[in-house]
Picture 1: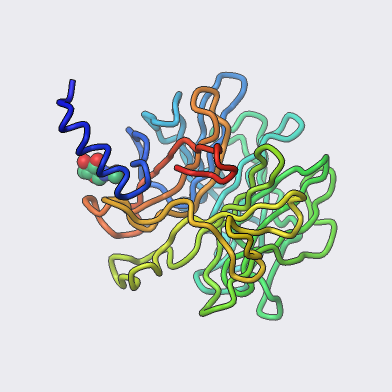
Picture 2: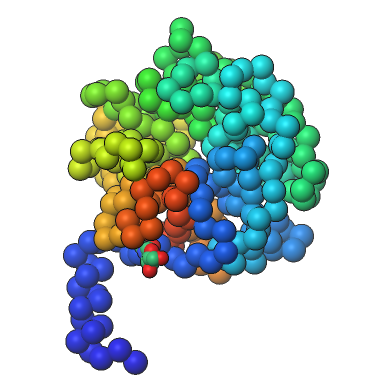
Length: 320
Ligand SMILES: *[C@@H]1O[C@H](CO)[C@@H](O)[C@H](O)[C@H]1NC(C)=O
């Protein structure tokens, strides 16, 4: 048992930062842009992430131990763009008996980008079929960058959120199988200043609202070029009753005009958390997961760690 003074110090430290530390992680915990899905047949957790043609790992609990499975698409994507052998930012779903993993093809800082789809019945190694582009494509003539996919079903219709920098976060209606865009894209969130650093969105329904989580700021290369304080990645959120527009933050500021409430930012040994998602854990309830730099481990991109926290929704806004 800790002494009461040790307990007081611990509680005080947690309150001073305002954020809980990440939950435990054992096994393979290095990650970038993770997505988590649980295979219903055996309750195995699957975690996909950027790198090695979407490498993925499995575990029996969100805390691990995580074991490497391999690459989802070892030969890359059939999308004919630079970056098709360096796939990014996976987003996993289960739809009508198939596991879907959307991914992005691009190169750093380029708008020549597209969102693709791979499917599998089991998620086992070598079980994946690549379907190429879902018709969400960008080039320098567009106001958006077609990366960082995130799918949601709203009242029986699928929508894809996507976007990174340029005019930030967009949405497009998808067909009934969620395999192709079926409408025109429109803006959901926009930060008017600087280089509009919003990306990596993830939408999640809770109660009466759809919550649009996204990453704000500079994601990468902290070991090479340290951002000014506050310019590094942090996780923000906006909410809407429809999920298709009118997103506002906790102060009522429109997220199409710079709004956004911070959910998680640098604190203690945690630096630059982002690339987040949310899933329903059978034990813990809603869980926010992300990648972060542990300042005691290192600032390089290939040292980013998998973090997760249980979400407290009691205020109507996600708190960790
Ligand atoms: C950071 O890494 C150190 C060394 O592995 C570990 O002791 C510490 O718990 C980690 N902190 C966080 C917030 O992950």
